[in-house]
Image (cartoon, rainbow, N blue to C red):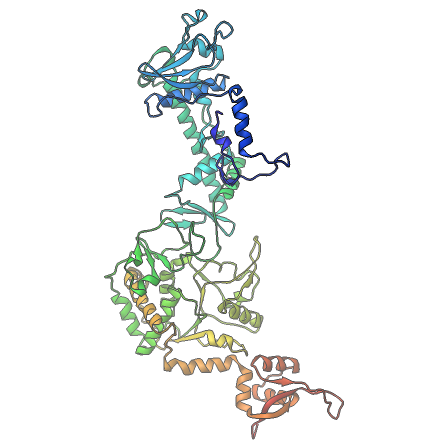
Length: 637
C-alpha cells in the first residue's frame, strides 16, 4: 500500500484532506455480513505475496538533497514512473521501476535506472546497452516536459493537497492561516458579518472594503505563485547539464506571468472564507475556542487586558497581556497605569456641589455602566438644568465603555419606531440625550424599555437584514432637563429607574477645553470608576441612593403611575367594601381633568394592581356592573 493515509480513514478518525475536517463514518458496508479481523489475516497469509507493493523511501529525509529528490520523485510519478528515494554514493537517487527511454529492451530485473541527486545537480543513470550516452536532457525530451516546467506548473500545497492557484478555497484557507496567531483565527463571523483582527482590535469592513481586501489577497496569492515558479524554475533550469543551482539567476521564458484576479473570484473567496471561519454569538465578548462565554468580565485597554471582577476581588492576575483569543468590538483608549491620578476630573466633580452621598451614588452609577459585570436590571435618568455637566458625564461614559464601537446614541422615539433599535445589539451603552416624549407610541416605547431592563427578548427590525428577537445587554442612560414620567401602572419600570439630579449650571462659564483635559486623565478616571465598582460590590450590589434624591424619585414614580396616585388621593382602604366603576371613573375624570374609558380604567386598575370584579348579580337596570374592591371614596372626594 503506497498511500497509508487512505487505510487510516476508519470510522472515528478525522478526514484531514481539507477543512472543515469531517469525522469518518460507515455509510454502507455493501453487505450485511461483517468480516472479523481473523478473516483478513487469513487472506493475507494466503495471497499476500501476490499483492503489488511499493517500497518506502529508505533515504533519510534530513539529507540535504532530499527536498530536491522528493520533487524529482513527484515529476517521475506524474509521467507514470513511481520511484523510491535511496542513498547513492555521496547523494541520493530516485530509483525507477523501468527505463523511461527504452524499457522494451531492459527492465529493473537486470538494471535499476534512476535519477541521481548530488550537490543540487541531477543526472540520469541506466546501465542498459541501449542507454549508453543518455543524459538527463534526453529524459526531459522523451517526456516532452522539462523538470523546470514541471516545477513551474505545480500548484501550491494546502495541507499537502495540491490545489490550483486560483482555487477560492485555497486562497481563503491561506488568508485565514495568515491571520492565525497561536492557533487562534484572526477572522470570525458575528451576526452574518466577517470581522478581522487588526492589531489588538477587531473591525468589521464595509462590503466595498471587504471586496477590496479579497481582491488584494487574490492578487497577492497570484504574485507569490509567480515568484515561487520563477524561483523554482530558475533553480532547476539547467540542472541537468551539471550547473550549480547558485549560479543560475535568469528567469526562464517558460514561466507564465502572474494571473489577474476578477470580481467573481473575489466574491467566491469571500464565500469560501465564510464557510471555514468560526461563528461567534452576536452579543458581548467571546474567548475564541471556548465553549462558554468566559470574557464578560474582561475589558481591553491599549496595553493590557483587565479582568474587572478579579481586580475588585484583589486577585494579582487581574491584569494580563493581550490575549489573541479575546474577541471584542471595543477598546478603552488608554493604557493601564495603577498610579494614575485625575485632578481635573476631581475638580469637575467638586464643582457640581453634590453631597458626599450623592457623589458616592454617582460613582457607583458610572462604574456599573462602564463595567456591568453583574446584571442589576437598572436604567438611569439623569436630570439637570442646561449646562449642568450632563454632557461631560456622557463623554466619560463613552470613553470608559470603549467609544463609538461600544456606545450608540438614539432618540426616545426610537424605542417605538420600526428600525430605531437596529444598532443596539452588541453595544454596552445606549445614550438617550435630551430625552423628550410625546403621547404617540408612548405605551410601545415604555413596554420595550420595561422588557429591555427586565432581561426579556425584544423584537428588532433591521434594514436589509433578518429581524432579531433577543436580549439586549446595553445599559440605558437617559438625559433630560426635566424628569420624564414613563407611565407604567405595574410599577415594574419605576423599580428599575435610578434618578441622578444635578443642580449647578455652568452656563456662560464653561471650560471648552475640559473634554480634552479629561481624555488625558482617562487612566486615572478608570481607577476612580473601579473604586466605585468595589464600593457597589461591598454594598451587596445595591446602589446607595441618597436621601436627597429619594423624594424626587418618589415624585417621579407617582407621576409615572397616575392610577395609584389617584387611588391614594381619593380613596380609603375598606376591606370587604366595593365602589362601582362608573363612580370611580367620574372621580378619576375630576382628579386628572382627563377623560378615560371604562375599559382603559379597568385595565390600569388591574395592572396597578387593584382588585376589580364583575359579579353575576344584576342591578336595577338589568346589567352586571363592575366594582373596585376593598376601597371607598374618601370623605369629600
